[in-house]
Amino acid sequence: MKQSKIIAGNLKANLTPELMASYLAKLESSKKLYENHQIIIFPNQACLSKNCFSFELGAQNAYPAKSGSFTGEIGLELLSSLDIKTILLGHSERRSLLKETNELILEKFKFFKNENFKIILCIGEDSNTKDIRAFLHSQLEGINLDYKDCILAYEPIFAIGSKASATLEHIQKVCSILKELGAKKILYGGSVSLDNAKDIISLVDGLLIGRASLDVDEFMQIIKLL
Ligand code: PGA
Image 1 (tube, rainbow, N blue to C red):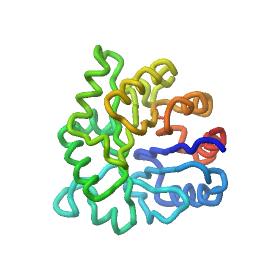
Image 2: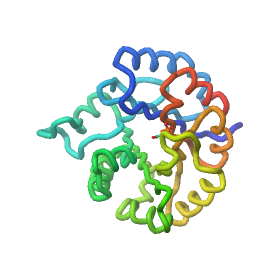
Image 3: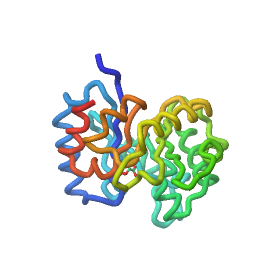
């Protein structure tokens, strides 16, 4: 039997509630396709719905609070009401566009760990990082990598939303650094496509896919390859 992998789709600020509902229904109707894998979909927060499928729904972000005066954010109460127990933290777009710091990400990590969430923590260097190991180490400061539901998503910034993924050699090299730093499970993200998914997945525990997950048929074609 093929090894079970995690294949996650990050839909960012795309689709509408109606489009998302048909996306999820189509994926659900093809559940045989991924019976050996774990699929996680991160819809835009306005398109979140009950986590009641053969795959998991997760939140792209949330504020580390039950509820309250946090304009534009969602909190634990809302996620719990939808039975959502999976969260993506530290995506480079939140770090760069919304100025999320390692400190805030750590606070979120601790909060959602305490609530037994599965946490996919995104880290990754950009192309002018001189000491990749030291940089990744700094992004992981205070993070409990022994937490059983902590999964790292290695997403080099230069590969996100770009023309090409990182090379297989680079992914392999960084994964071994991350393992030395204590990572247990590692996903790769950054320009994963139908063309490169099969090669990349042989090096990691799974994939975090942006653009190539926006179209459910393309996403399912990738799953079929693995
Ligand atoms: P991409 O995005 O696959 O479009 O490069 C990946 C991500 O940002 O998670």
